[in-house]
Image (tube, rainbow, N blue to C red):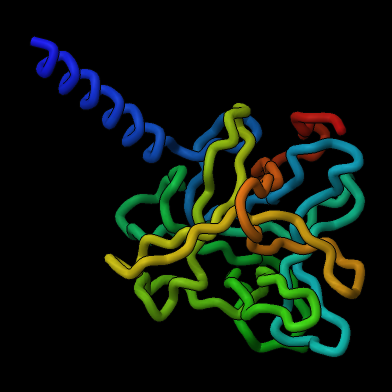
Length: 221
């Protein structure tokens, strides 16, 4: 009887974990985030937490471009669109592999894509930053640097990013939280965490075509 009860309990736990992993990601208004629609990715911390994510450049290396955070909380940055590894699902889901691509007006200095990817380790800082120039679609080992996951933070409608691609099958991939880090140019950027206990920065998703007067961020610094 005890064995049966333990088995039933384990099934409930596993079912709960599976449901959590399949939860739809919600925007700041509580609506499902969907693929192909532009959203601003904005700091979930109001005030000193800064603004939204945007296209930037390193000094002395104009291409490929990089992912930076705007300093002002009034600046939402550049919108992104999401693409799922599963092309049959148009809802973005927690803990699932996604591409992120900046969209909208852009100068023509760089001909690389605006898809996010993990950069090679930076020699001067020792960090692995997130840059542009990734490949959209084609999930597999050759494109794993372009796949990220959106994870729940425990606060409603607030999420964090993680680099832990599942697109390479049984190939082992180290998992890293995506944190904020300042580079040598003084720009606030996204980078892979180093070691244990890293705190990933929280973000909210704001549909790009909604009136800005309706937007309120969730946490005040």
